[in-house]
Length: 186
Image (cartoon, rainbow, N blue to C red):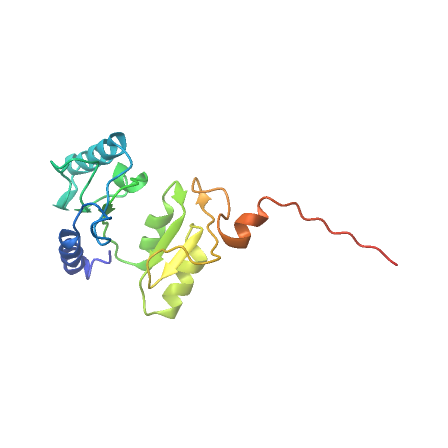
C-alpha cells in the first residue's frame, strides 16, 4: 500500500472485512464459507500468530471462531515486512498482509521478491504506471483496476512456483493436444 494512503486504506479494508460474515452459504450466498478442513484452518491460524509475533499488527480477524465447522474470519495484518512467512508463503485462506511502499519501483521489487507468481492486482489511473507494471511484474496474470476472476475462456499461467500452464478455455484444452505442421506440394 502506498505510504501516502496506507492508514486510510487499511481503515477501509478493516471496515469491509468486519462487515463480512461467516456462515453457511446455502443460507446466504453473501456469507464466507468454511475452509476445507481443520488442518487447513489451523495452519492458517498458526501463520497469522507467527506474523503477529514477528511484529505485524492484527487489525481484525485472527481468531478461530467457536462455532462448528472450519471457519476462519477475514483477517487483516498491517505493518508486515517482506521477510515474513505470511508475505512469502501462500496462505490459501482469508488473510491479507499489507506492506507499505514509497515508489512504484519499490512496489514492483517487493512483488517480484517472491517464489510465487500467479496473479497480481494493480489499481491506478496512470497509463504509464499500468504499462510499467505490466512489463515488470513477474506473475502470469495482472488485473488492473479489478480483482481476479475467472474470465470465460480465460488463461491462467503462473510464473515461478505458481502453476504449470494455462488451465481454462481453449488454452487448457490445447495442453492436451500435440500440434503438427504438414506441408505438401500437390
